[in-house]
Length: 375
Image 1: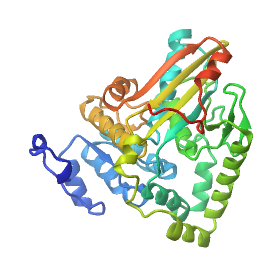
Image 2: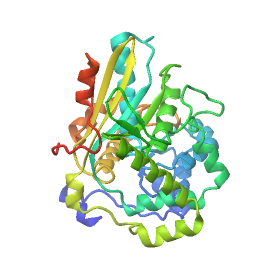
Image 3: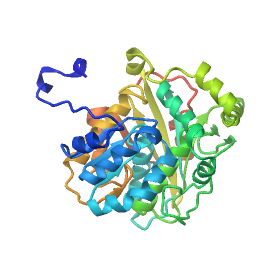
């Protein structure tokens, strides 16, 4: 830590607590109003800290994308969190803040234009141009999902598009995309996106908590410019999932293919990272588009750390006493309250507009595989 501390920061104390030392975690949480965690795999290391935060009345956010772990926390700890007035907000990094805040901006923008009773059409989130690399830790966490989670629970959770909503919640979404298809709106091809499973379920929890309306649907796709690219991505994802379900193959991939946990892109690569995506929806025959730009660096490291920093500061400053498990879009003190902060301090923007024609819409949405200038 010493290399990151400036002279102005020297008065800030550094508190050390082992993830498995329950007493130390409680002592740490008792000394602060909000905690941010990046400890993944969270299913292995994250639960004791969440329990300590709830017991000590400390607000919490993290960078997890582990849906089964989040569901387990909600099922077992939400009543305690509500009783203690503690706000817990998983998935405040690239998993899943841009998707979640983007959907909120889109819904609120349409309602501002059409009225609060407006019927929101399906929101399609197109993942467009991007430059960045996954870390070794992230890839190992994804592999850990297949290794340590009970298969029956994994299938049940990932087979339910509303897994993070209360039991029995039903909406219009039916499941995850498994294959590519052509898309009339963008003129490209929509393929499965590796993060959609986690992001979609977070957005649907926001749908439930924020009452977006019964017509709301949400899908996240990788937008590609050609049939063959859509086909190759679909085959690649299907084959990868099939292989990692086989324990010996999974072991070989973990040992000999994946980069080591704790490794990641260089500082130069992190500084050059960026991402652009687009959310499209219709209401009353009109087209609406939210363009999401992350132009401050690599989404998995640099920009995620900035998102987490602003979220934990907002949690510390908010005076809300409402407790429970929230999303970035539904939590008091976050949501639209941090939209301007993300733009000003993190160069993460959510620009909403009403688009006049279908042809204009096609010119604004750029596929993932097209080369674009640095933002």
